[in-house]
Image (tube, rainbow, N blue to C red; front, side, top):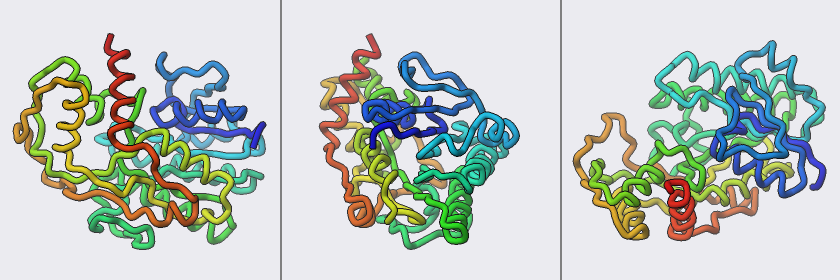
Length: 305
């Protein structure tokens, strides 16, 4: 698998950074296409960074030569989901533009990074063959779901080599600091009193290294073409227990549960069945929650100094 060429859209983000880092270790040629330059902590010397927006069809066609790549991993999308038009544009229209650009190319795989929010009201543990074609809770969820439907249709009609990896919650070093794991770590390191919800929500947390292995495994896997595959641990934990665990590992921090109200549309249980990832990708998570948190805490202690 040496000398492969990969395009990572959204390559300057948390997942994109770790994926690019792994691909460089495999001696691959890595191109990142993102709307912004990478943060200093996520900049990699050998990556070719392009600035662009996949929702801008004309510029995309101008800047990206489809036959220059073996693989495409689509991680792009507007992060602030409160902007409805931009969210739909970047996630759905962007995915549409990108996949159509590569439709008649020689790429071996187009991996779409999906989201568990696509399941909408389907109860956990969620199974891939139960597609929810109703509107999900959010514009973001709907944009991701429409992208999935579009790609599956391309696969069915034109044998387009696409796989949709449906993620749950991913954490690890270099994650954006507005996420639950880094927020808790920083509060714990500073020994803060900090407000939390009651923490009864069940969530599935996957360490970033495990996710990257799943993405790499999907790239040369023809059996996974035209498939939606849940990527998670299958071992949910209550948010309250996660926060307590982080504080115990740090050795400080004073969470105050019940101080923040849950959102009205808060999903109480969100975790996957993961049989398909084992069957099709020969993949399952290997990093325990404790080990992953220790590695992440170590990184953010250094980052905080």
